[in-house]
Image (tube, one colour):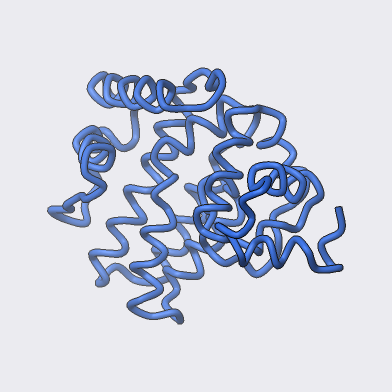
Length: 218
């Protein structure tokens, strides 16, 4: 069940998939899944900087479903590559990233996307699943810090993140934690990373060096 998946994910970061079939609560957000998502939201909100956005259940459910299917596709490799690619594209494109509450809610589960990427990439960088994960990563920049992207995220998508202080703080923290130089492509992010590092740039030498280079002006 999706609700059990979310609980395992939030409690231990480790999940088990019994079969490649779809659980009954994947298409509709069951009452049990709603309860689990509300609990997850409350825990993350308590640990967040500033005042976290409100929960959008539909967005949180969609983010959980997308991650669930990515996990299944990683485990059950007998699923045809074309089916994997098509379903991931459909799931990803159906999620509306509109406003702080949607971004926050999607990220409640999708923040584990980099872990799935690492597992898939370690198995084979030429795997179609890896390409699909990268495509998802490009669409959800807050949740995908640490995944190398072929191009920098669109400035308009990054602006949506920085327009809310909680999301902005999460984004900057993840960039620093992963030394993601590829996320320094916009002026606002560069400024905020500089501010966050302050006088302790020696603790993040790769980022500090990148920020000092001429191609990353203030």
